[in-house]
Each structure stands twice: as structure tokens, then as C-alpha cells.
Length: 190
Length: 190
DNA sequence: TCATTCATGTAAGTGGTTACATGATTCA
DNA sequence: TGAATCATGTAACCACTTACATGAATGA
Image: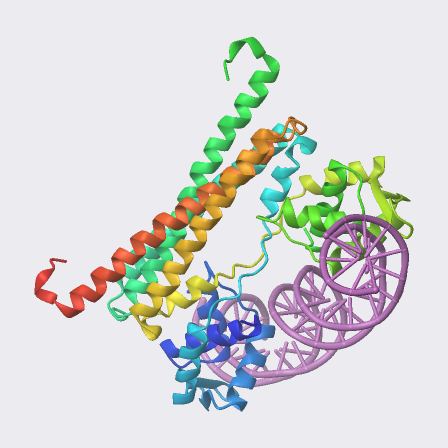
């Protein structure tokens, strides 16, 4: 599926939870979907305009003059369902850490260690964030029907962070073995 | 770091292994870095032109008329080292599966199951690929100095695939519990 | 000879971010 | 009063993909 449809999907999804302004859509995407999705102003406002033109959202009075509150129409709800069911078009892989490590021999073992330690710290930070989000979702009485699905996404984040932590620690040991076997070859039997 | 520098880094990295044509650079990036990096023709040829203009690569005679063989200059090797040491600029998160699951209540548990089963199959496939790559690297006598670093990247892929498999299976159980508790509430405690 | 692969490039278009311009409202 | 936040939008730019145009070499 075209990548442009994904912005539409995220915006309709945000509005499906509750009607809100474009500004609030951006905040919702950043704060609620932030750990697995992002959209910028430059995407959100044009998307709102075209969704409105196509009749998928309605524009109502906002709390302030000049502000609007968008809400899904019936057609918009259908549209969201259709989009969500379309197969995803995976983005091309681009992992900067792996690219650097692949040329690890060029930058040296110490520089690699720094990169990996940084990845480890990041993953630990993420894991803490996921725990906080989980606690927040568990404590939220309002969205009981969404809760199991939201927890699924948090769980995916936790699994991924755990894997990154395990890998990075194993990788540091492997690098230590590598340099040790260069310095004191007699000490190690593979 | 700017995203454009990353193409430069990948191209210089490919040429650091051995001199080759632009066409071969693209093949190397696709086949060797494929599981964590990608570049298209439209990026590679302009990058080669600008790297040549800046003196980071030399253009030699190719095997055929009209074809060139690019190789790193000393300045190019320095440039690669500099680029590899710069901190990465992580791309904004965009996980289509998570976006869909977050609105899982809208599409329903069965549709979510399909998505998750697909993710499971993909991860298993990736795991097999990583095992094949690992075997290939282990059997390659030529690149002994690069081997430990290449294995690090394969290991990262394996960890990530394992995490995806474990998560997806757990998620399917969670969805089963969810629907079971809706159909036959008396059967389940919690 | 004819399809495939090797090879180099360009052009058009998409998708996306960032910075800017503007102004009202809230609250300290 | 003045800073922070809410709010809407546009313009310029960057990164990237895809499709196209071209043609030589290889090999069935």
C-alpha cells in the first residue's frame, strides 16, 4: 500500500478515539503512538484538508475562534476499516548501527564498543518507557475495549528492547574475546 | 547526521571491501547489506559522481568499454572513517503492524490474528535467512578480519527475529484468551 | 539471433521534515 | 505585560523510489 495512505490511516485512527483539532491529532500521534509511529504538521494538515474534501471527516466548531474540531463521518469509519485491513508496505531497511558495525574492522573494536554501549543504554531507556506506558494503560478505566490491543503493541516494544539488550551484552563479550585473543593468543582456546 | 551522508557511507563502505562498478555497488548493497540497508540506483550514481568530484574515489577502466571501476582514495578512506564514527540520526518510527494493532478493536480480533500470523511467518523466514548467512560467513576464508563484525550484525538479526516470534506467539494466545472470555465468561478466572 | 545480464545515467514524482508566518488564548 | 501554549497553515527543501532511455557484452 502507498505510504501516503498511512498518514490518512493514522489521522483517521486518532479521530476514531475522539473528535479533536489538528493540533491535538499531532499531539495524540506523538504522545500515544509515539513509540511506533510519527507524523509531522506538514503531513497532518494537508491530510485533514483532503479527508474533509472527500467526506471522511466533518469540521465542527472548536473551543476557540479559528479552531476546528474534526470528527469521523460514517464514511470515514468505513474508510479507516478498509485502510487498516490493507497489507502493509514495509519500508526499506535502514539500520545505521548495523551499517557501522558491518564496517567495524575499519573503525576498530573500541569504537564499536561505544556504539553498542549506546544501543544498550537506549534499549534500557525504552524498556523503562514501555513499563511506564503499561502501568498507565492498566490504570486507565475508560478505554477497556482498546486496552488488550494497546498492551499488544507495548509487549512488542518490550520484546524488542529485551532482544536489543541481550544482543548488545553478548556483542560486548564477543568483542572482548576478539581483542583478548589478539593480545594474549595463548590464553584462550576458542 | 544528515540522511544523505548515509548513502555516501554505504557506497564508500562497499568500495572499501574492493573496487567495483556502480552496478556492482548496488548489487553488493542489495545482496550483502540487504538485511539492514538499502540504496537505489537513483541514489548510488549521483553519490558516485559527487564522491568522485570531491576526490574520495578514483575512476578507473572497467572490464568493458563505457564501464568504470571505482576505488577508494586515501582521502576516501579517511572520509569513510569519519562518517562511520558520526552518531546516527535515527529515522522516525513507522511500524505499520503496530499502527494496525493499536486500532485492533476497530478491525476485530480475527483480522489481528491474521496480521500477527503473517508477522510470525515473516520472522521465521528471516531467521532461516540469518542462519544461511551465518553459515556462509563461517565458510568464507577470505574475510577473516571482517568476520567477527559481520557475525555481530547477523546475531542482531537473529535476536530480533527470535523476539518477533516469541511476541507473536504470546500475542496469539492473548487474543485467544480475549475472545474466549467474551464467548464463555464463566470458564475463565481473570 | 535474441534474450539476459551488465552498465550508466536522468527525470518525474512521492513522501516527508523543517522552518516560517500568523495570531488568539491562557496564565503567571 | 509578556511568556507559553494552542492553533492553522504554507513553502522550501531533502531523501528516496520508480520508470525510463540507452547501449554493449554474453551466452543459449
